[in-house]
Length: 265
Image (tube, rainbow, N blue to C red; front, side, top):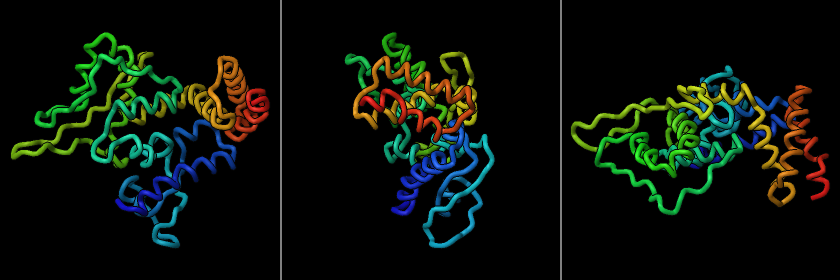
């Protein structure tokens, strides 16, 4: 992992977004597409793809794959997994909060001041799930962690740079054995998740929350202000019309530009 791979992690979401916009692809393709852009190195070593050398060594190239897999889409990008880790290990709470804020548009409130930060004890063979279990015992934490933990742990199959894994690295010690990665969880509505593939299918079944979240972020960026209650109601109507007419992302993008929220910014 070096500068070329880091650059590929940054270029991938930009090129991916550009194609979805230019070709007016459906909103579901943000979550479970059949393509992405990457380099030979990242494609082989991170995404487990059979890559063909084409042009310059580190050139980005468009690659196709089947839908419904481990990789692909915003939740399967190495850059996203790297940005939501700390370079050494993964942090389910950080990834979970990121998903709630940027995919579901339902961010949790800040943690109570009286709750101490998690301090992992690496001298014990504890999984991140076991370490977080203590927070679930606190009534003030449980409500938020019921939302955060399922979507955070479902991404634990990705290591700190987005490679697929089934075990955590073994702790130091003569008899240390790697611990299995546990990704199963239950969403607040009762939906059971086994891994990220189930979560992607869950999001695609009702793409409205993601569509509204992305729309709000686009308008917030474009207008330079937070969205009000009336803005969110408008976004809901725009997204609902987009879904009813089975339109794509470019259609949604243009409708947001033509909306009162943007034109009266």
